[in-house]
Length: 102
Image 1 (cartoon, rainbow, N blue to C red):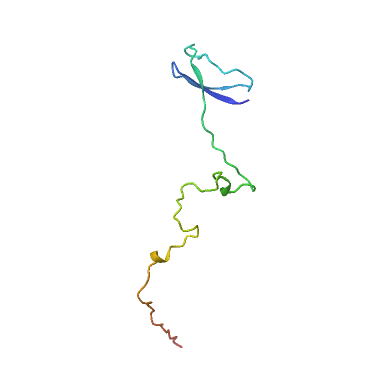
Image 2: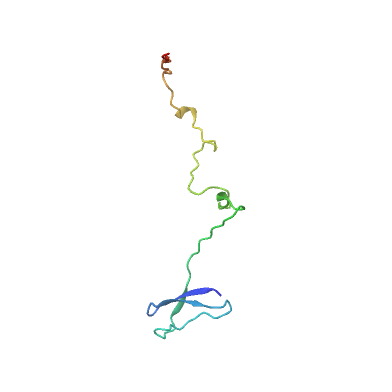
């Protein structure tokens, strides 16, 4: 049997009630006896666990990711040649030789 949450709009009394699916919703508050009860619906988070579910399964229907902006690079992440920094001359350090004492 599911548990339904109720709250009285008149006195503010809140409680939970076990009910069958086929039972009618309660309407009379047990504290103030007013016809002011309303069901309280709360969002339920769903977590799929197991070998058959992946983190990428929760995507938008259009296939685009939320929170990502298209930067016009064609999706490869490479910067255009005009934005890549160019170095004047490559700097190389002279190779250091180590001698071992015998």
